[in-house]
Image (cartoon, rainbow, N blue to C red; front, side, top):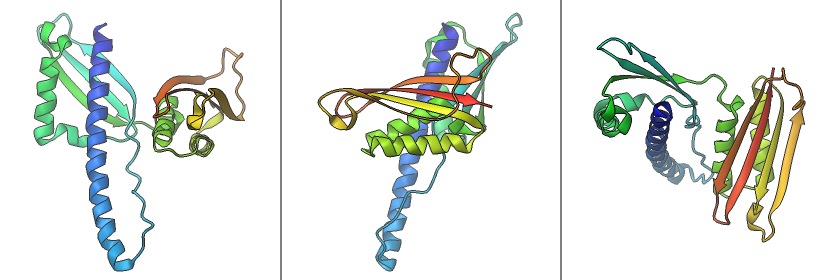
Length: 217
């Protein structure tokens, strides 16, 4: 229970801060491009790739339980390393929020935070699901998003991938299922290294269900 509370807090807080940071950076970039476009008269400007802000996993290491000086090491693996979290006012605000949490209030301990970049982030099904969710919320056609997601996953060391989307796709009155598959996917083989993720996407038309299977080498 304690580990789950720690994971939920750090996941929600870090993702919230990264999204705020990305919004600020994109606003600055758009302002700069507007100024350039006025001079060059080019309207086709795109936001630069900032790295994906999703969290792959959170590793918790508890050390020194029997001794007086106990501490917890929390390692956060993400596609985009948020180094700004450990600097200035944001760091102080982060520490204040940690002290307010239940897991710290009951048993106060030193917490050491490490930020690491995940290798090949788009080979992780949860990050791929978040990418698809962002595209669908921006009203990008679902077939195009699924194709893009498969292409991103195939760039990494994957043998096969399968996507399934269910619900009121594109705001249709009748719910339906759509799927796409590429490569091998031996679901009945126990020795096969298959990562699975189920994700709910909240859109204007309702909730969509997404399932992803990735077969690794």
